[in-house]
Amino acid sequence: MEYTPNDSRSTNKRKVVAVVGGGLVGALNACYFAKRGFAVEVFESREDIRQAKIVRGRSINLALSHRGRQALKQVGMEEKIVTKGIPMHARMIHSLNGTRSPIPYGKKGQYILSVDRTNLNKELLTAAEAYPNTKMNFGHKLLDWSFESGAMTFLRPDGSEEQIKVDLIVGCDGAFSAIRKQFLRQSRFNYSQTYIPHGYMELTMPPHNGDFAMEPNFLHIWPRNTFMMIALPNLDKTFTCTLFMPFEEFEKVTTEDQVIEFFQTYFPDAIPLIGVEALKRDYFRLPAQAMVSVKCSPYHMGDKCVIMGDAAHAVVPFYGQGMNAGFEDCLVFNEVMDQFNEDFSAVLKEYTRVRVPDDHAIADLAMYNYIEMRAHVNSKWFIFRKYVDNF
Ligand code: FAD
Image (cartoon, rainbow, N blue to C red; front, side, top):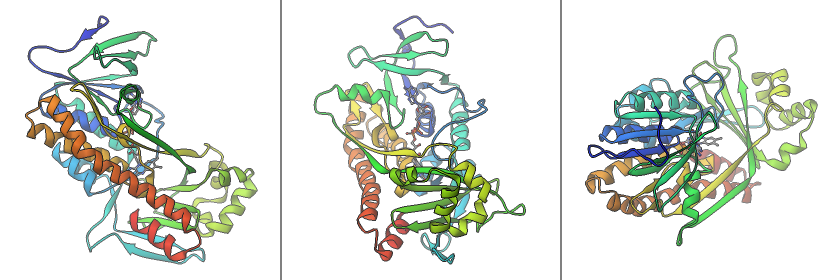
């Protein structure tokens, strides 16, 4: 279907909502808006991940908690996702001498779930697309949009540009949001962005004799003062291990022998589980990734645009709540839509009012945990409590 420049998708019948970003939060949000009967258009810069051979992105798996589950439930997706998750009833602390001690997350029967990021994203895209009033536009990268005219400019896969106008723009385009750039040009928009000195790297622990190499129903943690490794189970009986470490430490390890030496010093019990050859190979496969914390306010511009998920509040992952908070954004917005009868000018304002303090609190808690960890690097008790209590 061809669109002329400045194409307005609005009709008399239905208001049109553009969800920019078809990641975790965008795909879930599309379900929410479609369920309410809006004409929903999702614009995602990547190709359709359900067809892609290789899916690039952040962490391979994520911890889904109550907050996120509640949001999935509202659009009938909780069961579908939960059945493909692995319950983690407790943390399993790996000490340097190899002893393992479990610490439950809560009361008996309480748990968080390890879920596959790509599968979760695919399921949510499929759920959004199942609504007849949703249209997916993959390979559409938002370049810019104008608050004055409301027009968005997209780069299409063939290199051409397309301009589109809708009734509401919902920016779910992640931590480096192109939608948010326009907010920065507005007066009285508060914004801060902080990169932490730590990076992260993912390593795979393969199955052993056809089964999980470690107890599967735990979030495994190796707390090591300034270093930390965690491991979450996957359905294929692998674990994804994530090593969090200051970039300058990553940079000190430059040879295969140094990788093994480093693991012998800090994570000796993990060496036979990951495998010497795999460690030597995988440590150099990808550079360590940066982690950014973004806080801003307000989350809306007039009655035209609202940002949610990482676009509004990227948080450092030490609380395991980034996606969960983004999912909760969708739930809260939906409640405010009920309260204000879908009147965008009232809804967007109220959404900012109720949501900013909560999202800022999550960002602060995640960062506090990280800063405290660095400030108390020599306290065993601290490491035990801080790393362990919150993730
Ligand atoms: P994203 O997942 O970044 O999706 C944004 C989408 O927008 C992408 O599909 C992207 O392609 C698209 N896009 C970007 N720019 C444009 C553009 N210009 N035009 C069109 N489309 C665009 N959270 C948890 O709750 N639990 C965890 O256990 C957890 N673990 C984590 C571990 C690590 C190592 C990291 C880094 C993060 C972790 N998080 C966790 C946080 C979680 O990954 C994010 O909060 C979540 O991905 C945010 O989803 P989102 O949809 O807002 O953004």
